[in-house]
Length: 380
Image 1 (spheres, one colour):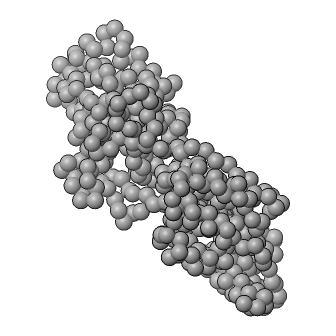
Image 2 (cartoon, rainbow, N blue to C red; image 1 turned 120 degrees about the vertical axis):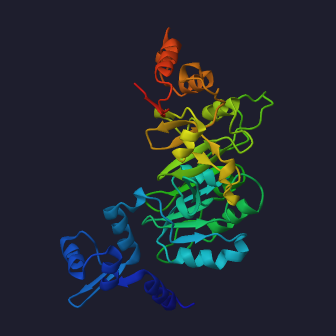
Image 3 (cartoon, rainbow, N blue to C red; image 1 turned 180 degrees about the vertical axis):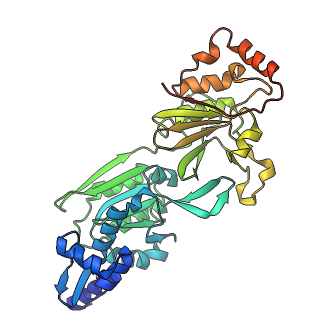
């Protein structure tokens, strides 16, 4: 393609009129032009009867003014096809519609991407009170914050996914208005060794920096390497707009040992616990939508698993646990619950002090028909 044709194509894909910009920002054209006059937003071409804007400028302004990042939303470019050869043209086209790529994240699994904030709620797939979430394993971010999610690129092993990530990084423009310097080969090779790899272009736009680390959510890790127990696993969902991690799987949710190891393994998910909720009965937990079906794809709610201990973090995240609970016993005699709360950093001395069991028993004796309620506690 001739250079002039490339420029024309770029302008067609990236410039919008004042009317289109006003519609995107959900303001009147007069308001938009007032912003231009005050310098609140810049136009690339301005005449008395015409004004043109970069699409990326308008989107960046919208993100900052309306704080769109506060609620994860589906990115404009989410390319789910695999392997790369099936979607390469689609990825090249998407990159051509973006600004200069400044950041790249590559992950071994989706959960790591979710913990870095790259997800959106799939409201079409509710599981009881939970919503499933969508993410990707390779994210490219341009200078305006626009994101491209590529499902085919992954990291952490020697298979097709990392090779696709390698090729995508080599597809970045090396000339034109959105050109970037090539990523050094030794940095690219990290996608074959590490499970979380991040690339950042420096502020001058000249040098790539690479950071790599282990997976946050590698289910193969077990705290006690000599243990014969099942590996600790977990599933991420959204509950009332917050991320929740179900500690365990459908074969081991009701297991105090698994609950304890899940709490140890996923402390990074709730680094600053501030409160907890304990539901004395499964019925109370299910009534609060604190459950997940064993086989959610079948929506078999009759086999629902209740999560009776919820650890809440300052960030809004929650870890849901389902330890063994002794029926018809109050919290003062639920050792598995008290041990988990202590492990999470909560003071449970009031449940262990002399006379606590007797006091609880007397309360139940004097009000035998009183309705059981969830027990909530907070950190001092």
